[in-house]
Length: 219
Image 1 (cartoon, helix red, strand yellow):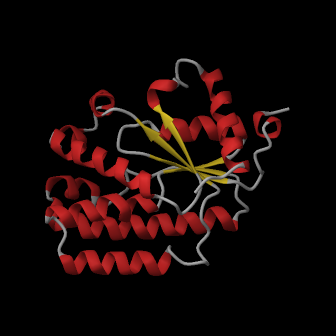
Image 2: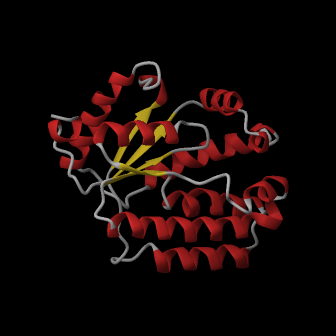
């Protein structure tokens, strides 16, 4: 009996992994998909035509980047459900509007017109009864110090050139966002409480927590 069957995770479940940059979403996504025999939906970074430009000039490219992400995540969300579920997704569509777009609007690197255009489009596409929401959102959280260390360790050039104040701002906004999030059930995991790379067997306790949350959802 595999772990999905052992803990009664539905075959058609769609589970999204959320959290700030560097918190370990891709690692968690891959480990859960392997343990549950699910498919992965990974965030594509290398073929994003705006990301490098964005990190060099937030004000010019923030709107373009958010529209690109919204379109790509919307298509991916539809695809996962059209294929019958059984997916672990790296990063949710909700983070784009709740954190990134709002942060750039508040800081003046996205104009009011662009922000209103973006949020109106997001609401029309996502915040409707027809949009398929995940069965569970797993929120990975950790201290700012731990997250900055992970960003430094993975060594992406465009992230290394970004001031620490940006990551601090994002960290605070993520904490506020998750405390108000209610589009689907949430399981919060602190990155200090597990190490699935050093101890792959620790994924079982996470799957047990996933099962408990899906069966007893609290919005």
